[in-house]
Length: 282
Image (cartoon, rainbow, N blue to C red; front, side, top):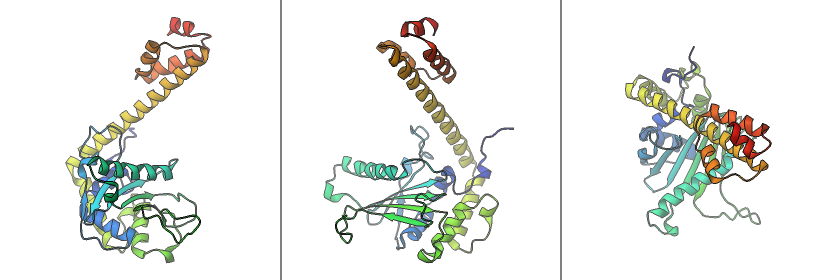
C-alpha cells in the first residue's frame, strides 16, 4: 500500500495546506490580527515567493510572506515537527527580508518593521505558553528596547496559559493541533470556521491537487538530493584521511547523484587502505 500523502488527508498544520489557505489575504489578515492583537486594514501576500506559484524554486519552503498597509513585513511558517536551531532560523528569516529590501536600493533608515512568526505544534521553549514574543532589549536596563523593528513570535499548540492570551488565539491553536477528524468539529469561532471552509475548498480544487502532487515530488527530490550530497561528503572526508585527493576525483564523487553508488563508494572508502586502492576498486 502506498505511503504517499493525499490532499484529502491534510489539516491546516501541513505546510502545503497552510500555504494554500493563507494565500487568501483575508485569512492571513485574520491570523495576524489574532496573533498581534491589532487591527490591520489590508494585507498583501507576496505570492511570487510561494512554491505554490513557482514550482521551479530550489529548496522547498512554504513560508507565507505578507506586507500590511504600514509596510510592515511578515514571514509566517507552520512547524508541525520540532527541528533544531529554530531560534537561529528566525534570525535568518529576518535577515532575508532585510536584504531583499536593501537590494532594492533603499537606505537602512527605511528598513520596515518585520515579524517572523512560527506556528509550532510543539512547545519550543518548554514553558507551556501559547505565545512567546521576542525583541531586543538592553541587558543593563530591561526598560530600554532596541528599536530595530524586529520581533520574533513563536506560537505553540501545547500552551496552558489560557488566561494570558486571547480566546480567539487559543481556539485557532486548538484547530492547528487537531487531527483530521477533530479538525472539522465546531470550535465556536468564526475565523476558524472560515479556515475550515478554505481547507475544504483547497481539497475540492483540482488544480490544488495537481500542485500538491508536484510539491510532494519536489520534497522527494530534495530529500534524495540532500542524502546524495551527504553521502558524497562522507566519502570525500574518509578519503582525505587516507591521502590527498585530486580535484578530478573529488568532483566525480561530489557530482554523483546515485545514492546506491555513493553508498558502495562509502563502504569501499572505509575499507581501502589508500586512495589508489579505492580508485582500483571503484
